[in-house]
Length: 359
Ligand code: NAD
Image (cartoon, rainbow, N blue to C red; front, side, top):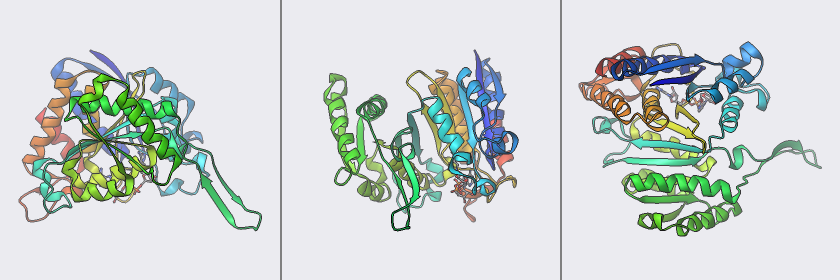
């Protein structure tokens, strides 16, 4: 099969981890007789430096014309002082909106061999997916920074949701749950926020709208409780569905359950089949350029791309088990390395090479 992949390496460790993921993809393509054609495009700080904007038109065009998009990470202190629309992160929000990527899937799985890297004493079985609405809510609502009538500096953001925006993300979560254990927790703040009350109402309307969903065990949970339950008893969760801002925060919290942000992949999907695959972490400027980044979240994101955009289940499974075998052999990047436990510290390149060799 021939597939065209738009590649946004971005900033900081983005280029380092994407390089490793491409190695793994090339080995997989060779083994299964596929051809992956890559087109490198600019986004984020590097795009600001070269073109003056974080998301050049050309990037949107190439991404729209590709079968999937692979993204490293964007951002860094160099560009932090720019106006909001000229920051690297504006590129990220822009590409999500341009491709209509409303559904963000963030699997959180603790590999047995990494139980020691988990912050919990007795983590138990952690295998959940956070389904986060990605192009609505406070990150996309009306906002303003201004001086009020008394001269005080003031700012606001608005969290707006329409029923259809909630409906479509909830359906994604239900469909996913039907392939898993069938347990869905919808997270909101319905005791305080109007947008959350609508969220909860629509969630149950969707649930009651089809016999297909009757096998699902659905419950609501307030976001403050969910934040607590995630570290108290993460094993109770299978699929969590929530709005943009809550999902952003909860998924970073959940990442420490897997040992490191560097282990957490993600997929962002549209209704029409577009897909963008990226790790949950950022550009990690503190370790950029030092061959210290963990490339596994990026590599696991590439596996998600094969499964969800290209229907290549076997190939995706091959990459995932290669990652597991490399970890089982004791190789660790700095973020998941614990001294004195018989494991060996490796750099980003060595980790990528090891996974590639296991395919
Ligand atoms: P970050 O995720 O980049 O880093 C947080 C911490 O985790 C750092 O200590 C970093 O070294 C570590 N870390 C992250 N990924 C790692 C990996 N693969 N291997 C080893 N360690 C890893 O978050 P931050 O420091 O808050 O943000 C840095 C920049 O990234 C900012 O400009 C931010 O806006 C941007 N950012 C971008 C994205 C994205 O591109 N999707 C997401 C979040 C943050």
